[in-house]
Each structure stands twice: as structure tokens, then as C-alpha cells.
Image (cartoon, rainbow, N blue to C red):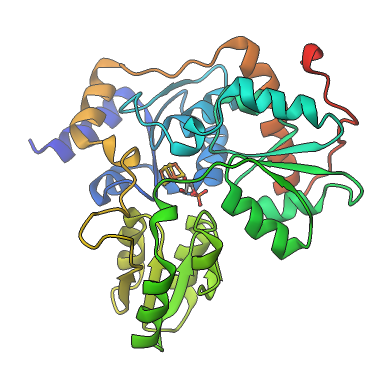
Length: 322
Ligand code: 13P
Ligand code: SF4
């Protein structure tokens, strides 16, 4: 039996729901029960009936599913699949930033540790950030982290001043603005798509800026025949599947041939690791209780606001009470 079919059989036998992010390899996306952006994965994890979930993505995504569903068991193919944004926002330093700005609303990207989420007022993803930030009263100061590029893009788009944490995605910062401009010149008929984790020098050349799901839906609905794509390579799989008739061009990175547009963390997941994880129930994700409860408040606020509800904002951050 092929490895792919072995996994399909294991899924049936174990009743585990397999969820995959758009940045995973094509074969992983093809065997998943659901493929989505980081918000869609969190929501699917909450809404699916299965009590065991294997999330083929990075660990912070699986932690979010676990926090939102404490009774479900959540697994990842590789517990080492981190994220440079998580690494660039250590808890103690983030806490210090919050303490220095106690009256600000802390808006935190889902690409963060459970500990940092626990000292945040609300979590956002790039698919819901505009709606959520717009729901914060205009007179409240905003601390945005850990991705400074997403924050800057939001701040400019919404005309909303913010203080930024200086974190960035090690993959998206490598797209090269000057080379992108040259490529655009060579392909004047191409639509340029970019994830907001890219530097603003790159975003200025983009026709559409948005989450992975937004970039995919642009390819699915825009009648153009050519797209230049400034995000991780895995997204090409669904784009090609839905529009085999279009030319998809990877946006240029600093060094050619470096595969810099592959996220090394997402690509740690393999079919072998998924098979082993399903078979042996290894790599279960646990979130310390002290962080889980407080992060749930911020994650729940995200879902409420993203789904059209309203929320109350704490007036002040009390470090010791949280
Ligand atoms: P999305 O929320 O757009 O899926 O992005 C997640 C991510 O990690 C981008 O690098
Ligand atoms: Fe993190 Fe960047 Fe990888 Fe997304 S692409 S998981 S932000 S390192």
C-alpha cells in the first residue's frame, strides 16, 4: 500500500480529523479533511465533530485549536515546527512591553506563543484583522505584535496609529522589492498578490494584499491569466488546482534558487511523520493551564468579532491579576 493510502486508511480507522495549512506540501493538502488559512483552521478545529485532530501546520496553530477545545486531543506531525514570529516575541519581554503601556489594547497576531496570547486582549489573523481593529474604540491606543509588517500595513490601511513589536516572518521578508518591480515591468498583464507579512517596500507593488485564503480566492475569481505571488510556495498547489489555465509566477527573493519562499517550519511536516503520528498518537500538543485560560479569552474575542459580534475592552492591563 502506498504511504498516501496508508494514511487514508489510518484516518478512517482512528477517526482523527486531519487539517492542513495552505503552506503544506501538495500531497499533505490532498489527504487532509480540511485545508485553510490560520483563522479557518482554528474555526474548523472548533466546529468539527471529531475529538482528535492532527494539524499539519505549525505548532502555534495547533495550540490555538487546543486552547479553544480543551477537551479535544490535538496532535502535530512535528513538535519542532515553530515560527520566526514566535521566536521573536519572548514572553518576558512582551510582558514588559505590556506593562509599560497598561492602557493600550494589545492586538496580537495568531503567530505567537500561548504565553504571549495570554497577555493579549485580542488575537487576529490577516483575514480578520481589519474588522477587529476597526471595532476597537478610536480613542484607545493599540499595541500590535509580533509582526511589524502586518501591523504597519494595517495601520496605514485603517489610518490608525499603533505601536509595533519589531518581529517579522523570516520567509516573507526575503521577497525583493526592486526585483519584483522589474518582474512586473516584464509582465505588465500580471496581477501581483502579496501576503501582508511582506515588507512595505514589496507591498507597494502589490495589486492585492491579504491572507492566504484571500490570495487564493483572488486567483479563483480574477479573470486575469497571470499572477505574481509573494507568499510561501505551498499556496501554489490550490491555486494551480483551481486555475490550471493561468500562469503563476513566484515573486523574486534575495537570492535566486535558494528556495527562500519555502517556510522551513511548515515543510518539517512529511507524509511519514503524519503516518507515524496517526498510528502511534505521538506529538500531542499541551498548553500550560496558566496560559490556556487567559489565551482563550483573547482567542474567543477574535472569533466573536470576526463573526460579527461585539466585545468589551478592558480599560487597563493588570499584570498580576492575569
Ligand atoms: P494566513 O493566516 O494568511 O494563513 O497566514 C499564516 C502564516 O503563517 C503566514 O505566514
Ligand atoms: Fe511563521 Fe513565516 Fe513560516 Fe508563516 S511563513 S509560519 S509567519 S515563519
